[in-house]
Image 1 (cartoon, one colour):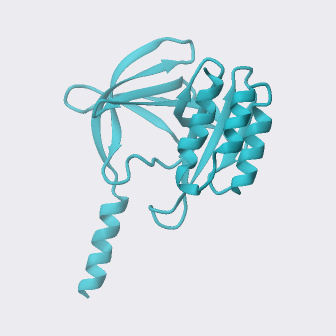
Image 2 (tube, rainbow, N blue to C red):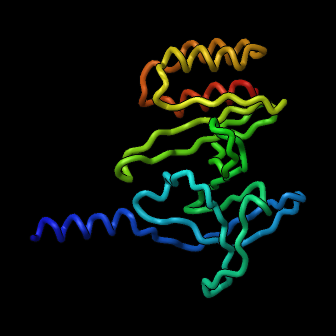
Length: 192
């Protein structure tokens, strides 16, 4: 009986979202930037927000009451600062054709990289997906569990007009533990 109570308690700790207020901004579809205080997830799994089809940004007043709720029909980007770390999300396409707020990993003048995590099973099991964007709005969609050789080839082909990025793509992706660093390094090389 103690084991069952522990599992129930553990599930509540893992699945009950905690929230806190942080300073941030939203960019409306008409390119207006509005500074807001917003509620964000907080806790053990807050850095790996799952992709949600019902994504909303809630701005709050000084006592925490919700003032305005923004969603993809009214904004195209939002961001916030938490523990001196800036985090941005931008409305971008994913492989299935939908558009969601994706985490901005690299944001440059020639190329950008976005990611999201799709959880399955328990909250600790997730697959990271990447959306690569060139400034001409061409997109490439890859998964962190693609074969390393597939990642190399597809990224090198996507950045065919950038020889340094192609060369770097072929050198990177030696192991799965470095995938996010490797894809970010290749995209950053395009922006140099």
